[in-house]
Image (tube, rainbow, N blue to C red; front, side):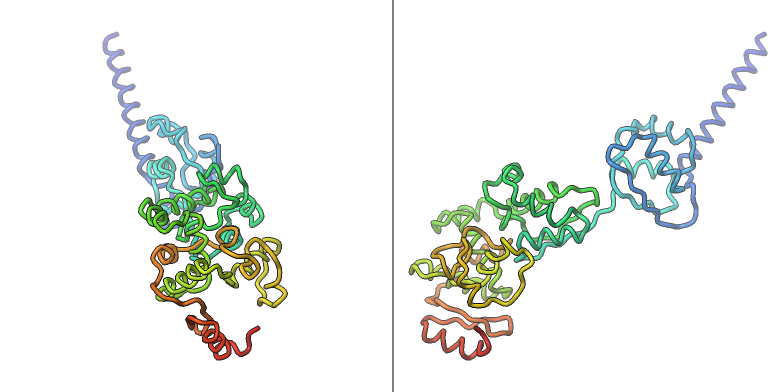
Length: 336
């Protein structure tokens, strides 16, 4: 009887050891040895069973109860992150599970260049597969959503900081927009806010002016000069007469507007048309970069009141209307 018991114990031990060896081998041995990238999408809210089936269908793991056991031992069944994954084979079941738990999803870069307005941003996001143009634009103008992002504005215009961001395909537009706003708050820090207060301008007014500067020139060397012209005109009670504000006002009704401005456009009264209104437009007309913001806070010390494009990316600045008209004649003979 004793010998039988010993035999049973030895047999059980051997079975356990063999299973342990087999289980360990399964965990560390890739199912596929051929180098290949396999894309698999784990849906939001997918159960572990669904994840298991997807991995097996894509030949990422061998369909075996051992994978379920592995997940249980690692307490990973409810820790798998949803998203789009690139499984670069060969990967062992253990490596696959760790990748899913860490949430190493595929991310895509989205670049928002300086000077793009909310219409441009909505289109860039749509092109990147991150929401629809209409849906993105709606969120940027939704008062409740704007408040949830920590702002008190009519739109997110001016507060979506130009930068390169990385998102997964499943990232919702709300998350993307809030990240852009958070980036703006991080860049426009307390020091910039203090500088704005010293100038007597609110942060919104600074961003609005910076958006005009951003739209008028891409030349870093000219930004402080452009800012000075606008500030000088404001001090004298002159209209800003900034063409980009006219375009932005029109885009409120016609988002796709990209035609050349005509006299009829300059006469169209909108809260943004600085040919018709005095002072600043209703709000920012694009999302300016840090250089344009700093230019408004530290404008060039000059008496310039006018500028006109030289058609080469730079501008001719003038102190008097007479000098400005000569510059317009010289550089814009075929203008309005």
